[in-house]
Image 1 (tube, rainbow, N blue to C red):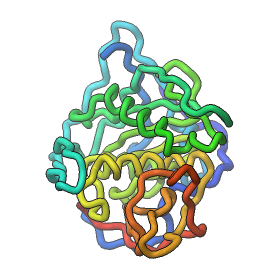
Image 2 (image 1 turned 90 degrees about the vertical axis):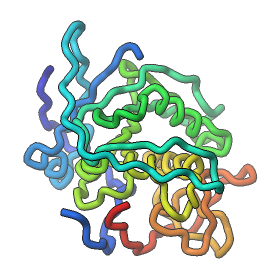
Image 3 (image 1 turned 30 degrees about the vertical axis):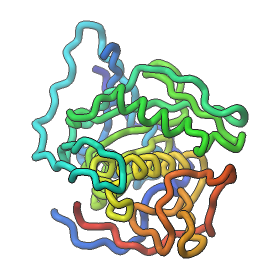
Length: 292
């Protein structure tokens, strides 16, 4: 398998990462494409981010030659299982996951139809980190595609069209389901193993949140997962954080609902009642929880 080198500089500002917040003390089937991450080796991903490099410069698509053995999986760390879903939302099977994965990703192979009838076309891949053994990459790809094609989503107002592609086609961004440790490395913030982020053309979904959700959503994992995808993809589409527009109103999807609702009600969708639902620009100084 070929080696990766850092090349080029990136000038994009990432508005999807969580910066400058108070933090509580933390405890110190078919063709598969493999994404090899230059992270965890002398802090490669973090060092690249601090140098102003886009993660696209240190993360590359490397195909396994026919007949070659798959990369050896690292020994999984003890898994953390999610609690049973509450009656407030659909039942979702408890999901176990390691804190640290292999640093390689299995890429979903299917290509979907274009969602949306007008606007710029954005193509995306979907991949799952090795070590997250309880998530099938093809099923995860379908779940992502269903959310991003929903008529209440980003394609509703004619500005964007979205299409899922496989490992071989060009893509504008990749949705990565990662372990908490890899999330910290890819997002340039190793201390944060709780939230998700967008960094460059990587939409980084933390499996801890995918598995467990957050208390504010009352155990409704299906709704929280839709929010999580729409929020981080919204950053890739150029949107910044927003504030609650008023007590009792639905939270804008670009509000950091993972960390707090501030009087708003949970909401997973950009569109409400056929219109884009927004709030004032800005973000709250919410602490990031130390752990689940």
